[in-house]
Image (cartoon, rainbow, N blue to C red; front, top):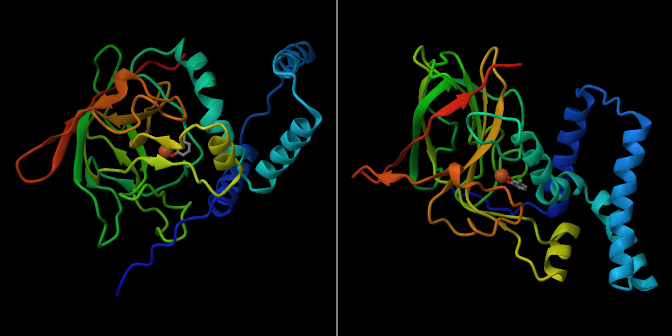
Length: 284
Ligand code: MBD
Ligand code: FE
């Protein structure tokens, strides 16, 4: 039996990402931003737009094309994708400025809560015929004072060897390459998975059209998404990247940091291994 390799369409993955985000947003705390702050921020955003129009002498046809494009982003469900690729890194940088311990990175549009819980030494759920270089990530979760954090949760999600995420590509089974790993009493973990491929923004939708029209490229370097949580500690949302990987220096989402690059080595059996420790600060 051969595996059907349907590429997800932009509209398909966009619709899933929008649906997922709406579910997440429904559970978010209400933001009670005072009117002065709303006015100040929106005025600054609009000033930026007005400034670009003036600087580049934007024409009516360009203005109408921009409106049509904005509508297409919404119709295609691509706002979560667009916002997380082009805007989230700036928000994350603000958060990072007050965060100690492991460096954070953006969450992105493909996090799904409530995945299967796994023991400290485990394999992420995968297909029987999952392709890709075997990858082992081991390490320890600690408080920034060095105390090991047993029972911490390492919530991990990643693309497969073709760059597709479960939940956002029809041919990948639900829960594939996603799991919540619970550390042992010494805060240690050893996760067996496969090397993810770089991720390409879908090019058949409005976000892809913009990238093409601007002459940019649509790639993110290969990465593992990780959120580490431990009782009494500030959670860290981050990503790990791979030394020497393509697009590492030109991530379309501008979400790489040198501290987040691992360099797995072949252990002699074709398995690539890397160690990475996570450090969480106490919840304030
Ligand atoms: C991804 O996999 C991702 O990590 C981000 C930030 C945006 C789109 C797809
Ligand atoms: Fe990703």
